[in-house]
Amino acid sequence: MSKLLMYLQYPFVRYALIVGVLIALCASLLGVTLVLKRFSFIGDGLSHVAFGAMAIATVLGLADNMILVLPITVVSAILLLKTGQNTQIKGDAAIAMISVGALAFGYLIMNIFSTSSNLSGDVCSTLFGSTSILTLTTWEVTLCLILSVIVIVVFVLFYNKIFAVTFDENFSRAIGVNADFYNLLIAIIIAFIIVLAMNLVGSLLISALVIFPALSAMRLFKSFRGVIICSAVISVVCALAGIIISILAGTPVGSTIVAVDVAGFALCALVGRLAVRG
Image 1 (cartoon, rainbow, N blue to C red):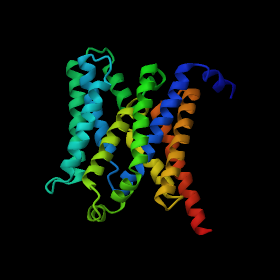
Image 2: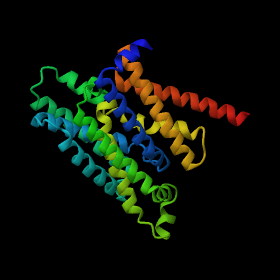
Image 3: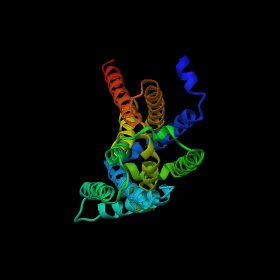
Image 4: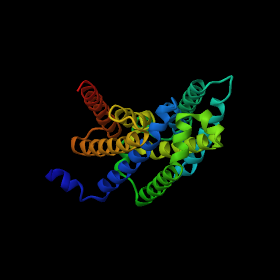
């Protein structure tokens, strides 16, 4: 505890905890919707797109890669949604196409144009997360705070519509809900979350941040509201625990957070099973 208190005196540690909590909270809100709509791996596809965009931004030498990564990821989310509705290319095939293509092109671009002496290290840190979460600037924390507030406010304002579209899209259309618009809104919000989470867990582990808290909460609660609230609590607690363990033990941040999420899922599954038997 004394070691942790000593670390908390440093601003970069406090920044990491703030950003980690915000990203985990945002990811958990939309994670439930994605799991219920059987579109969980949209996060995986968009994270690979973000990796490709980040590779381009690195080659171009952009000081703030968010200028390029965010719009490309949002546009890809829209294209992915439209392509997934195509009768010739189903949703899972569209995700696979975009995911593998973006990952391959991103790595190819970094190989051909990169001037870094440690290419393997750069790629590995981008894919699996790195200590970049501990080197955040005040501007990056502020940007994360702004984007997180936007995501949370949009989710709260359109909660009822998102609920309707999640459970019965056809019925939603029948009662006049613009399901296409809200599906698009969900895709754009997920793109925001993916870009935010790149520094925290890396592009290959983002799906875990979205899926595990939702699945854990579903083992304990049955109502949509209950699952949303429980998922948010589990996600925030696991992110905090993962970052603290990572700082104290010197383990990779992203992998540690995901490992804690997996342990949380196992615990919730056990508690849920015992509750059913009881």
